[in-house]
Length: 252
Ligand SMILES: C[S@@+](CC[C@H](N)C(=O)[O-])C[C@H]1O[C@@H](n2cnc3c(N)ncnc32)[C@H](O)[C@@H]1O
Image (cartoon, rainbow, N blue to C red):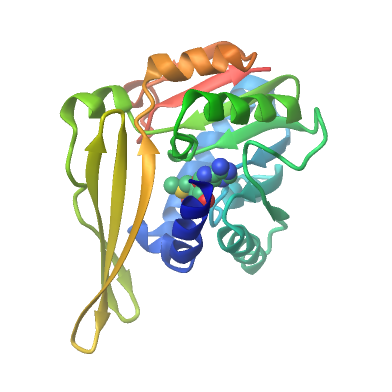
């Protein structure tokens, strides 16, 4: 499973920013949101933050810009390397390492906060793997450290079982890039076919990739968090935060 997930994100990493209409605007918006949560819960800071599914740096870069000492890790070495390079291009230090979130290469109690954002955790396809990852996030957190997870609202999506996502259009110097997904449901899991239509010779070139998600419900994740030893679990919905995904906070 991890080989195909890594391949998916290695391949997508150079064009990952194109899934956002304006990636820099998303970096700024998400930083404002995560920074506020970290300061609300842990005090003014700055803090030592691990983003354990940093991808190309959507959350990590903005948190570093806001003064936190951020380290990024990700299963995809191509994405992790791009995150560091994008941070450097913006005058920021963001050390990153390629690592599976189930085996984090950091000493115990290293971080005040661990971020795992934008539906990264549900790439782990069963409760055993999710608990293994959460236990390792807990291990690298200091006592009373803060875990911040964001993921799709799978309680709603399991009911609706959507077959696709709406097209997302991103402007590039070469023209518009269109991104959309097809979802193929198999019980609690679905295979995601990811399409990017890229301008080419007056027409379109199609880039197509496939990965798998577990539509992890709120109840299932809450049980996994307890099994991993987290307390003070707090679910925040979009209606209260204004953020585009549910957020789960928990304490070591
Ligand atoms: C949807 S992307 C989100 C990336 C980033 N947080 C963002 O918002 O741009 C999911 C990320 O999870 C990472 N990922 C998936 N499985 C992982 C694992 N077992 N360990 C670490 N990272 C993983 C992928 O490589 C990918 O970068």
